[in-house]
Length: 226
Image (cartoon, rainbow, N blue to C red; front, side):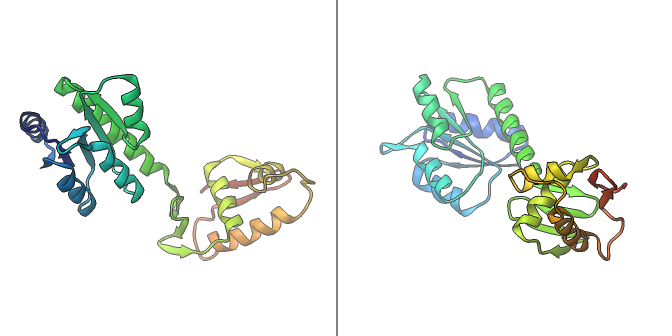
């Protein structure tokens, strides 16, 4: 796991870097905001530890703000001697993922790093839905089956996402109308059947097993077993 430490105090930087390396982390240290921001932008990191107060009246939060403005979502743990509630809230609202006040015990630092790592892993995992060899990337809206891209219209994508999120559960036409179309009307209309037919052709044609099943008189079910 690669960690970028942006800290100007030499003793604190040594304490952080030595401790993290002993725990198996790959650590790079930057002593100021300029080099820290350059490193953060140039190379991918699993985590950044940023001191709030940096030399030349620079604020570590300015680094975080710049990264967030560039859509860089790497978790950031802010370190600071500013311990008031207002300062902690400010650090989080301006892009920090966690805020640890100095002085601190190293085991607490490690525990917070582990928590951020778990949170990030869970977030990444939740962006991708999978059923058998079907994959949906919710962030890029990419859909593939057995590695073959599938092009869906926006409504078809919403319909597929809803079905996959309710995998192995029977969903009725009324449920689909209310959740995918966002309004109520006669569930006897054939708009659902038409959309399901189109989606089934794109998802199941030429593939095995079939994933989109009709439950006669009730609705539909998505999964390996019909």
